[in-house]
Image 1 (cartoon, helix red, strand yellow):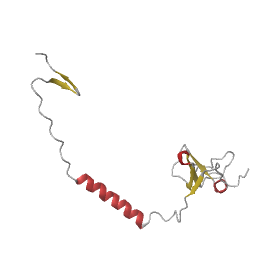
Image 2 (image 1 turned 30 degrees about the vertical axis):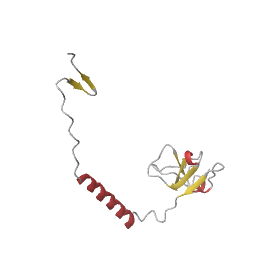
Image 3 (image 1 turned 90 degrees about the horizontal axis):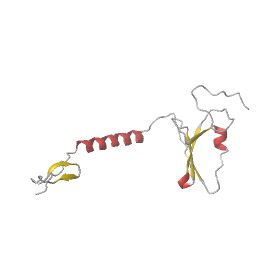
Image 4 (image 1 turned 60 degrees about the horizontal axis):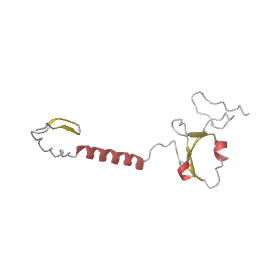
Length: 129
């Protein structure tokens, strides 16, 4: 057991049994597609995802016939780029435009006849003559 890299308090450790190294990647299985996604460490610990250290993420093996999708980030420290910011701005504009569109009132229901008394939901009370 390698104790040279203690896990910081609050940091997530590797999900592999008896591994005490800090997690660097997150593994998620998609059973319907017989695939697994290995990407950057998730922001929050998810109950159905596995956080792996660098060593275990490199030695990962999958069941026969499964596909591994590795998501690599070019520079995770750089933050959002101009394309990301423009996509957010476009989404905000579209949401604002949809909210400002005039909403047409639904058509008025036909007036109730004198025979219908005390309507509640889809039930009607009609007096017998």
